[in-house]
Image 1 (cartoon, rainbow, N blue to C red):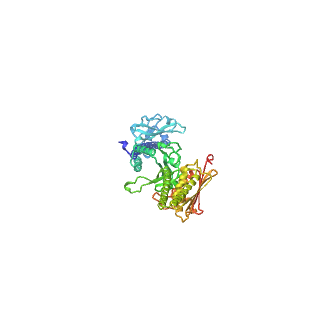
Image 2 (image 1 turned 90 degrees about the vertical axis):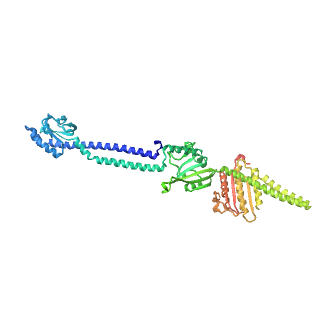
Image 3 (image 1 turned 45 degrees about the horizontal axis):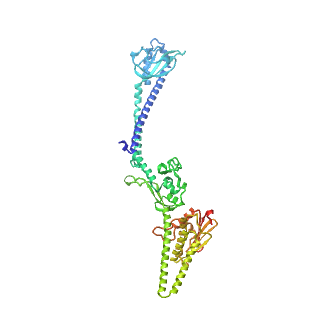
Length: 556
């Protein structure tokens, strides 16, 4: 049954039992201390009475009389009443009582220790006598020579002391009950708080939940990062560390090469949770995480990756009946890698360009073939032969120019396709080469992404401009670098918006069904990945210059 109890109930019962035990211990200790103080106080009071009586000249004079009891008994009874003592016994050095509260005890030997008093000392003891256990003080009566002539014992019974102590018990009980009540209220309030925070779960359930949590972090293929309301990173898993270029952390917060707790890289532990400012994040990602805003499938570019990020608030449980708004502890962001998908998309776009080029050439070829057939039907064979010869020479010359200028076949095919597409849209693509155009040592996929996106933007800009619609492409090597320049006759780019051009989401075109503003951002990412540089100027239209380093041994 106890295993079904929540953490709050277990802590409440444990704390309540602790308060009961603490109250009992403190109450007992306080009572014993008060009793000891009562006995000490009674001893000091009896010492004062005994010394006062012993120092009285009347007592010393009566001790030398023939019948000391006749003189001292009335005196002792009077002092006993005035001093509120239970007994005052004046005795001879041989223990013979001269005074006693009970007349029948006169002349009998005193019961108790007197050795210290016979030596001239005053001492206090708790011992049993004719009146029962009592706190008593024995003081010597000395003459002028210091000889002990008599002894005085003043005392109060233990029962009298206990009766006086019992007067303090209500206060002690009240303090104990107040302590118990205060502890119980504190335990109840703590139980209510824990019941709300832990949702009534027991430690076994929390342990099971934590095991599920670790399993999810270990098995999920998306990056997960948790950020609190102060901008500190609470936790990120291994996938997030890989995608964001972060250091994997062990459960105690130290850098580690393996996953923390088999799946989660916890930033908490012996070290303080790192802030977002300490992590090497891309500016757009840092801005998103710091803002805490809700994001749905946002695309962010890092140094070498294209990431899709979703972010939402980490909301605590609602209070009872919704009377209080739920607390927001921070944000949770999930991250997916879209780099390979975009790479495949670029390759697909290249294939689409080539397909469009083939379609355009097929369309042009069909028109020319129909023209030749019509001339033949009209009996103009010589004119048909002349038209076919000139058309063949033009097509062959364009193909020969591209083949002789571009040594990389993939780039040649891409440029031929873009040339056909530009021609179909009324734009003239002019190609210039300088030096060698061999690109051995550079990733062809990156070059296709760079050149393809630059030509697409240039053709779009030129197609929207008035005639003449031109796109000039220059490719060649200078020293140890490959230089690519693309210039169009379009409207150009505002110098103040040059930096925004490379930002994902920026576009001067009408947004399509899948959004715009990714092409030039991908170009910049590829250029940075290859260690190159990229500049934008606007002498007439827009001029993009890309410089990519090549290795010495592969330089022409």
